[in-house]
Length: 159
Image (cartoon, rainbow, N blue to C red; front, side, top):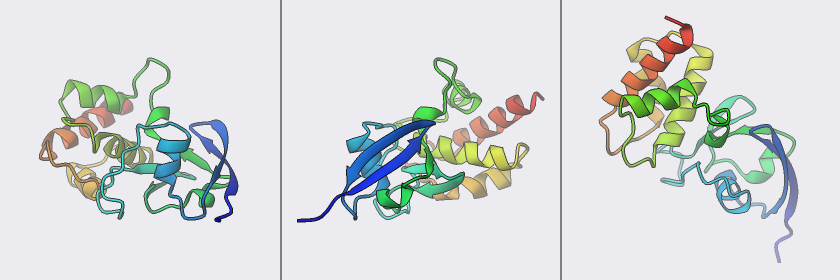
């Protein structure tokens, strides 16, 4: 019998306590234990970026992070991006400019784009494409995603 670990983690500013197996991934705990299903699991190997979250301010693939590693740390997921009914400018621009289609990659792309704009509020198109290169999309061809991020950056700068 595997002994479960007791973990306390802040997710989107709320404290959670849970038990998990030593080999259980963060994406599994978010979706199955905490019922935060916005984070999607695509490849389970860290190649697609669908499960992207922020861990202690760093962009990570939650399928590659063990849940026990988040003890005492903070995690930000797509559920924490909007403030109540007020969508984040990235979310609004993705809707307005059709930066999403099937929605599997969208939460991870939005988290990655938010991380980019927090570090660089005025990225070039090339910088945006480079930053989002770890987030794979099978539907949009990336152009509408990049346009949505660039429009949100402009809006957030007040330009």
